[in-house]
Amino acid sequence: LLSSISITLGVVGLFFTFLSRKESLKLNEYTVLNGLMSRYSILIPELMKINEGKVEDVRTYQTIINQYFILSEEQLFYVGKQLRPERITLIWIRGMIKQIEIFKDKDLNNKGSVSIDDYLDGSMFPLIYLVWNHQIKNGNTKTNELTKIIHEHINNSKD
Image 1 (spheres, rainbow, N blue to C red):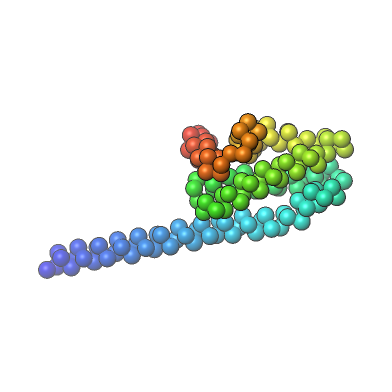
Image 2: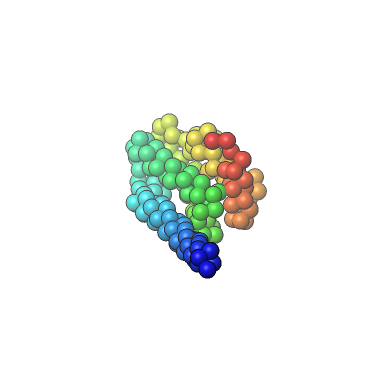
């Protein structure tokens, strides 16, 4: 009888542990997504200044681009680790490609030493490089294909 009670309590304990862990993972995913989205929301007005051609200072331009690429690289890391919903991945990747195209259009190469191509060489932002290169070579790639490529890159990386 004592052994049956112990086994039952153990099974019930495992069940509650499983439910608790599942809820904890959901909360963690929400926290990560919320943090990334908050940082992006703060960056939007600065990106709009670039998109509208209102940034004259090369340093300001570089700072905004650096902040954007650091955030995008982090987003792609979470995409590769499959720690985000698929619908958000679609929005993130499409948005990144579109923003890079805008950066290339608004490139301040004629105003100073900033070239968007310097950011896309793969040394500083390897995941963005991966997405951008795949986009250049293959055109409109499906997001799930890009997600798979990012996932494989992260899991095969030794960093």
